[in-house]
Image (cartoon, rainbow, N blue to C red):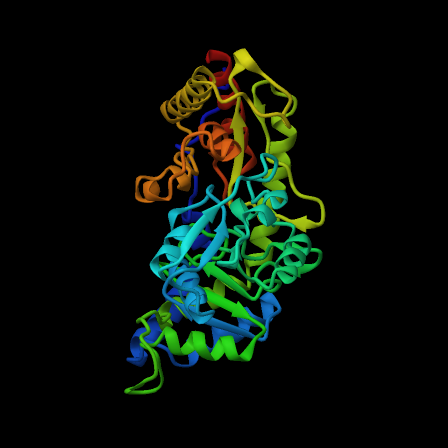
Length: 399
């Protein structure tokens, strides 16, 4: 039993980050409050320019959430009723929800068990005359093979909207995620690698026409005040969030490097450990480890990490039971963890009308039963990480 205890270790902790930048953030926030101008203006313009330069695009457009970024991206591409958009079933609901919100139909394909991202081998079989776009999700900070995906998209004349909500700073073949597809969409929710002190988001693009349309759509459909050209929404980025994000952006590469070091230590400390599969970094890309997500296998039916358990009810029940049991024991011993995502999107009640059934996308369904995200934040200390690993080992022995 691991005896050297520290305080409860949460899945994510912003307190240490605030100690580093709190004084600068506080001064910037007070300056905004004293200015009397809280929406738009120079702070937002400055952050948009800085973020575009960082991502490597001609344009960046701030908005009020990652969900709105995806929604506005689809609107700017005129995707709507009668259209289909291919995406992952193993992600947060907003990725598919925005497809439905514009009137289009989400088409789910299965995922790769090594990366948790779209299985690119299945994309072309899902394309129909109604398909207009693909939304690849760089899940947990792990990049999709964008070279191959863009080749597929170009050959079928499809738009590509990158869901970069968890991958700010990640790369594919030397290019920042969000600079490869037609539009990149980012969330600045506080737990993201680049997080605001509240909600926030951004869209990136090389296309000046798309940039102009996104700016119009985020501001009630108007280019000039009180002259509305289309039905838009109110999705502006607050000046307060913009100055905070500008400060944090200067630290992002360092924080991502710290996440990489933590992931490397997890890899080392958890190998070899029967009953779990550690996340695999994809060759050609750089993950930024928004999450460090392991798979907990059913120990009575251990298989090679590249193989999938059969879809029998007993295997399903055992794998999920073991994951949930381990998570509960970790919590009792002072280790927080998270399950992203326990119900794949194709099996969500809201999408029952699409006709998917259990077993249709077996890899996503298996991952939903097995995944567990361990504490991951840049300031996670070696002592804390050792406590996580040794406690996890104790729990695995008990289950």
